[in-house]
Structures are given as structure tokens and as C-alpha cells.
Length: 353
Image 1 (cartoon, rainbow, N blue to C red):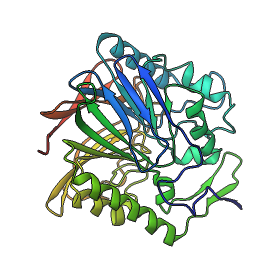
Image 2: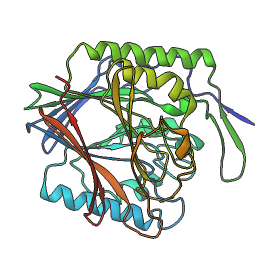
Image 3: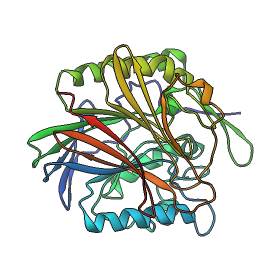
């Protein structure tokens, strides 16, 4: 058994790489601070924000290092961005199938990302997935220094999305490493070797305390929308089902501090679950069909009654799907859309103020 120690005796907001710079994109400026208590400042010139959210997009480890579905997703994103302003993308983990990357110089960065997703002027904000931990996850953090549009400054970080040239707060996004937070910290790589993350229950509790402190602080800052994003879902009806520790420890925080939505991947499908708890409704968004589709509803009876609002996965098609999010000071619209342009489903979230 291989024990992997990923610097877990430090607090949630601490990181090993220090980034402090400003990156200019076509319709936005990103400010990365050298202070991990300060969110990234993403200032958009427009009076709205538009972004894609997709997980489990990470190609394959053999030639051509991409799947047909991934290629179609990338082409669709490129075509949309030619016709309308897309300001950024959320990459929800499993960035490189099946065993992550070996180092910051790994060819997979080029062959499964840079050569596939063509828009150089649209930044990606990433989190890590379980497959990324089968390689060298810290190499993906280091790659933030190599690529202007690859943004992963730490295992956990946050983004303040501001509109009208940065004058108005719009969305606060908390990006969390659910692999470290969860009990699912043992994996088998392709050679069937077991890899284990050494995460103690005490340290997990510290992480959840950090999340609560962050959400409590943000609840006082009057962002119209608050999103938390992680690779593992809280609720799911599909192959993996609900993530128990997230149901037990993260879900109460999402509802207590009135988070609007929780975005996840891990399941290779599109799901929407809406759950009211502690007098607060959170929309649970799963968007993980950007590379390797999989259909399953085996955990349909393991989610709250009537919480499942939408499910889609078609393993016989090559289109794939993803979420397109459009938000202004009035509302946030989340559209599930296939890469042939067909709109599958839409969710509307009102400005909480």
C-alpha cells in the first residue's frame, strides 16, 4: 500500500505554490493574490457573467489522448464563444484520465487540454478529482504558472466574480477539494495498486470548520449568488450515489448559510436535485458527461424524496453535454445543453437580495 502525504497537516486555505499576478483576458481581468485568505478577483467588463461548468472531461492516456465526446464538447464551447461572450469555465475535476499527470511537464497538459480546448482568452478554474490523485496532483497546481488560462492556485480556493468592470459583486465561488474532505480516499490505479490518502478524521473536521468560517463570512457580504463547487456530489442517483460525509457535514453548511447551488462532477451524466433543508433550498448540479458517458440510476432511492428534478445520460450518442450558466443582478439561469445545441433543461435562481 502506498501512502500519499499531500501536505494535509496545514490548514485548508494554505498552499505550497505562491502565485501573485494579474492576467488580462478579452473581457476580464483576473487578480491572483499571494494571500490565500483573499479570493481571486475576477473582474468582468460586462454587466453579466457567462460561464460553462463541466466535469470529468479529461481525455484518455493513449493516442489520440481525447475522446470523440470530449472533442465535441470542446468544439461546441469554441463555437459558442465565437458568437457570445463566455467569461470563464469551471473544470470540476478528473482532469486527466485515468491516472492524472506525472509532473508539470507531462505531455497530457498539451495533448488532452491545450490542443483540445482552443480558446486562449477564456480562463479555466479547476478543482481536482479522484483520478487526478492517482498521479501527481500538485503538478496541476504548478501548471498555473505555465499556462495563462489554467487556474488552480491551491487545493482549495475561492473566486469573487465581479461585473461592470469590477464595480459590482455578482458571484462568490468556493472551490473545495472533496477528495481530501471525503472518506473515499483509497483508489486503485490501472495496475491495481492501492493508493491511500492519509487524511485523519481530526483534519477533515478542521477542513469543514474552515469551510464554515468562509461561508459565514461571505453570508455577510451580500453576494447575489454563492456557489460551492467540488468533484464529488453531495446527492446523486447514479453509479456512486450520495457521498456520505458530504451529506453529513457539508450539506448542513450549504443550507445554513443559504448557498444557492452546489456544482459537482464524478457521475458521468447530467443531474439536478433540489433539496430544502433547514428552511433553505440548495440546487445540486451534476455535470459530468464531457468525456465518458455512463447511464445509471441505481441510487434513485438514496436521495431525498422528490428531490430529483432531472436526469440525462445517453451512452449511445457522441454529443456529450455541459452546463451553461448566465447570471446578472436579476437572476442566474443554468442551462443543460448537448453539444449539438439542443437545450435539455433549465434552472432559474433568483438574486437572493
